[in-house]
Image (cartoon, rainbow, N blue to C red; front, top):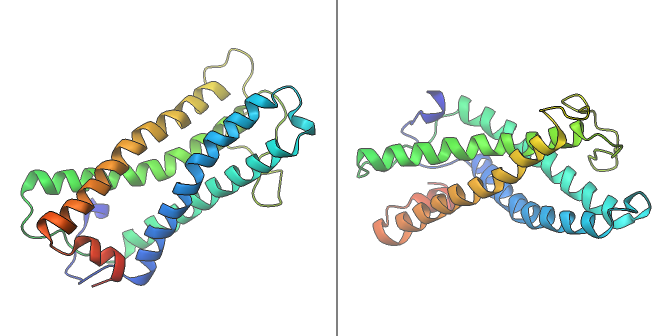
Length: 197
């Protein structure tokens, strides 16, 4: 599989490192913002059309989701067309397998997470805008669901909620792996993503 391709380059390029850290920063903001948005919705459930906090939190959350999705496409396209540093030679086979599985899972989540949010908004049975910065008429990607439909708002919202739970576990594994490389093995893997070669 091309995404697993390794090549003898000394470190990650500046663009690759920028993709990585920018994605992390956006996710660190996006996840708490999503929880806050849900709280705002619950408080103003009956009067959200007149409440600016619902629209402000929605605008921010939707916009960040689209930014993460766009960066993920750009990042994946770069990854598929450029050589990347190989894994350290001292890793045993199960560690290599775990590293590849973690990376593939993170890439999948970077697409499924925002697409499921977009789909849930698209399937919503009422009238609610989908934002991207100042544009509040982003088209849906699935049809608006009729009552009792299987692919409903609740279905896609459930996938969206499930993603953060799975994502938290996988991201935690990724961070633990990076810390293990940095402080136990001391093989420079984290330094390659922070400073290049």
